[in-house]
Length: 594
Image (tube, rainbow, N blue to C red; front, side):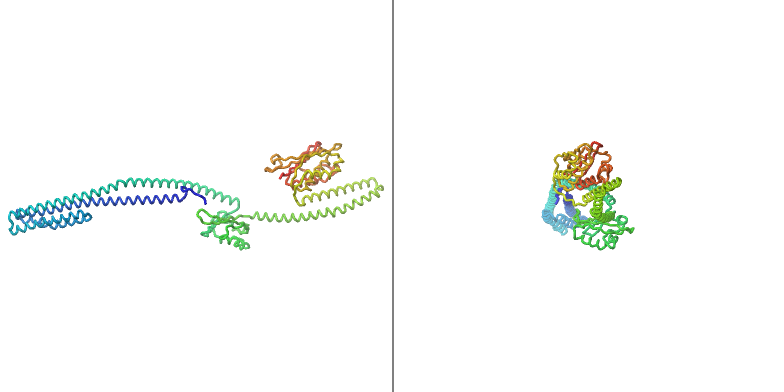
């Protein structure tokens, strides 16, 4: 499995996203917490303010009751009793509100209990004084004592209320300190978390931007590749199709539609719709070959016929295999090629092969006739001519004797021609069995076979060391015989033939006639001092039956050098000739060293 660095993996972005969301939730939680704290702090401030106001109201109501009572005692005016009477209800209501506002404070609740005691005491003494005054049962001393107690009680009430206000302020200060302590580190924490979040988001943005750039480049590359593939399909005469093995959905390329004569994407790509174009005689064959796509990883190539939309019959070849794509799904990718021309060419080759086989049979029959039927009457002609010469030659007229000589010469040439034709035929039809052979030995055997002619012409044959090669021995020996015989035949009169045979190894690029490859060749040259030839005939002399001289000047059938060329071709070599009139000829043979 290929290793992908974390910062290049899609998982990296997912991690950043999850961390960023977590940080955002964290910041949101802190913000919510501090908003809640701020709200509570505001509520505390408002609560303290309301408590203080209500305590002020409470003490004010008590003072109103006291003032009303004293006004009535001094003036006997009952209108002064109105604030006194109302104060009881107002004090009760105010105390209840204070009790509710301070319900969460044990200290204030304890203070309220003490305050309630003093309030009740104050109200009792106020009522008692009025009661005694109504009855006329109080004296100055009693009145004075009551006033003193009321004053002290009022002082106690005032002190307790001031104590409660002070306590409320202390509570507010403590809560404010807690709030400020919380708010002091909160901005820094939020700032740091925001910085971290910003860094992570920036990294994610850079990574996403790079991925988008890479994605854009990839899309551009894929677009170019897709267009190039479409163009290649058009030029190459093939189409492609995909089968998603997870969804069983087919996709045809544009050229897949064109191959069957339809416009691109002109119908839904399915197996059933494609099979409608298959030739009825090949339909079952195609179904059998494509039925195991889901089980087999490969679809071996097979050829079948289709009927295009324009009713033209074409030959298609399909093949494919399963591939795993990046998403993990398995997809079967196949190609369909139009091989109609290939099938027609193959049929044509098979027909030509049958014709060639028939021609070979005819050639074999000709060889049989040449070797048996033609030679038999030729032998009879030679026998009867020999008897005519031995018994009745002297009785013939000079013209008759000339006729007999011409007949014998023609019969002899006929025998040589038949022999050379049979030899050429054997070179073409013989089994090409290669074996390691010493070319020096083959050259000596060739010289031995030509020994009478060599001695007759007093020829000198020189050669350097020849290699051992993997060759067809009797053909190489025949090559040597034909080339030496050719030099002996076309030697100068009144001059001893000299034939120099030289061999060296060369690279392919050292000779123009050799192909441009890295193979080494043995270059074997046969150079003589004969009559030579004009260079314009250098290629024609290898043509079958082609002669440069009149048959009366030099014997021969024009087959020998053609045989040489065929032998060299059988060994994947090359042969060239170079001549200079009245100077000599050079035949160069190139044989592969390996």
